[in-house]
Length: 212
Ligand code: 3PG
Image (cartoon, rainbow, N blue to C red; front, side, top):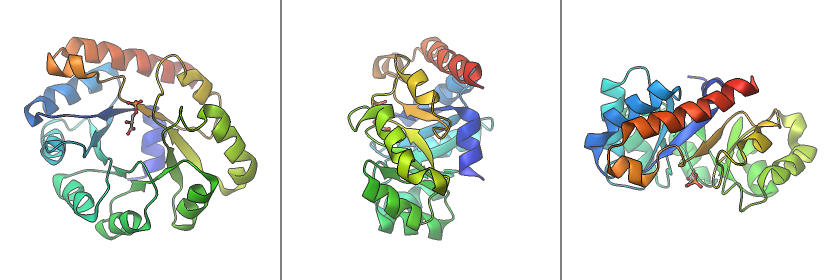
């Protein structure tokens, strides 16, 4: 799988924090229905691996990956569960290597020029810019591009991105997608309000369409 093309075609990647794996399949279906098939299930909860396994097995239209990969064990668990890609909030060569060994397409996180430089040296073609809003927002990426554009690097800002600022990010061609939790709010997940999640996904998908 070409992680770059997959992320670019999705435009918005829902960042999922799920406590109960029984909700994984209806959640994935609600997101796919709204037009967002590329999903990042974060390893911030014990349910992450099971949620990925269930989505992989039961929602073939979804392309599910693993987020917040902070250990080699999590990388292995993600791959074993069927994750198609991995994402991390920071740049850690140990995690990058583990993903390489597992054959898991991987997007490391960066927030500084030094981390971006290291991620490129490690072979990354795209990076997660995290935490995007707190670390300088779209202007920070524009400034990175002043020095790094010739490398061809692409960005996925995440952290504080939502409908109020997503178009600022989409004004930069090197920003191929944005990630965020706003599409899967905790209250909607807790109350199993799948219609609300589909609506939020549709709103985001409309913005992606308007961009292209
Ligand atoms: C992430 O890890 O990508 C962030 O937690 C998402 O940030 P958000 O909750 O501000 O969207």
